[in-house]
Length: 287
Length: 294
Image 1 (cartoon, rainbow over the protein chains, first blue to last red):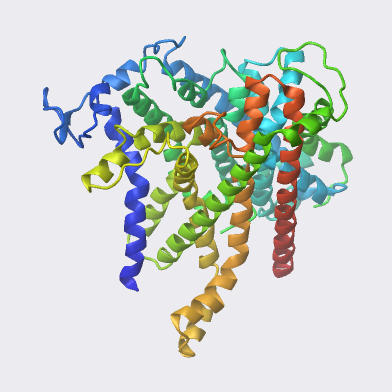
Image 2: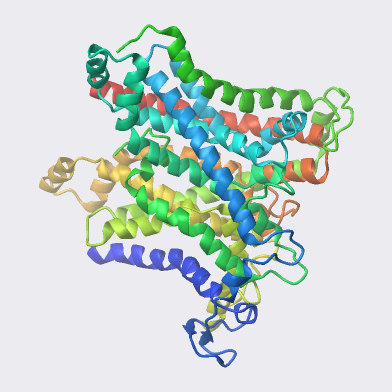
């Protein structure tokens, strides 16, 4: 029984992490080495390695090439990465601010139909992006918003708000009401109590919420694809557009780009590892 | 603290609610309106054409096929991910050296972008230079054409989905296992219960509420499957066209948004039905937690 569990863990661990290891190796290869029908596994610093051998000469070319536009594309990878960063950060900021306020309101005030409102908020998360994107697109056309950063920022804010409200409500519910009551007795106004008591005490919650909002905005594809074809293209849409390229798909560059794209997400995952469960269950399961 | 300050409380909850209504309720109703028109993506004047779009979708064989493909995908993906994830959680139940780090590493795939990783998996599964087929050939095994064989394409998408989302099931199942009080296992040990009895009478029943929650969450998500389909085959492949892919094909490649909207209404009904079950379930969990803490 003791060994049985390793019989499950080790094979799964190897299979699950191999794609990520392979990603790293590929980013060090040349295009020829990457699409060679005999894969080489060991990076070496040797200048010339025999084709078809186990080792290949490692190069950082793929990373360097990310700075120049790929054939048929208007901009280099970093341009799209910058779009992703701007859109991700601003929409995250907006969802956390709006979500925290809303969660505080539902947590501390008597609001008519509070439960119904909360479940309405949760239900918005389940709508398939493609089923709501056309009306949004029509609405945006009226305001000249398609193809803009602002358009995607607003959309991602709306998309992430449900998560932000539910997560933040879980965190704020845990702050004892006695703290604010003491502040009110001391002569704070309700708004001051919110700023000086609730906000500092929910800092962790806000950070966790921000990470989850950032990750889902960072990874989003359906909305970004439907609303953008030129100005505010994010990394997932850019990568997807490289398929069907005449010169073949530049795998080492894609691997290098994916790695750069994924490293922040992996670091954030490690940072919020103790709150992952909360994040994926909308704060309903706490541990 | 119950502050009777009407303005203040609506100042807190109002902005978020207005935002959500503008981006969800409005599109929903607009979608219903569009589904009765012949609107095109390119603009122009849309005319009301009654229920003709709904007539078209029931004649469209693509629609039935997409429903079947989506259903098959959801059932297989959720079932396999549940079994694998639960098996992993059982294996990870007892503490051992390095368990937190190992668990965190295992969770990484579910945080990644399906669209980006889907594209990258094309490289891994490629029939000529893909590392999977090279490994198979090293063992002298048959080399399937993962991305071009019509019988295998959906299966390849399934593999990627399982890679990404098994950790999700594992995470929730682990939480369920951790919540089982130790004294139950101790009592079972005193009664000399067999491993199988302990699993069937203690572990499984006490874990199942959380497993059900995980299944509901994964189902609503898998129903929307779009990113991986786009990355592996594009939206217009008969073998892998899910409902979302069909929607994309009709609206953004065919420019028929009136027709697309009527497709989307049917998808919405399915998603809303499952989401309602999910929300009722959350409400019951919360009610239970409320009783326990009260």
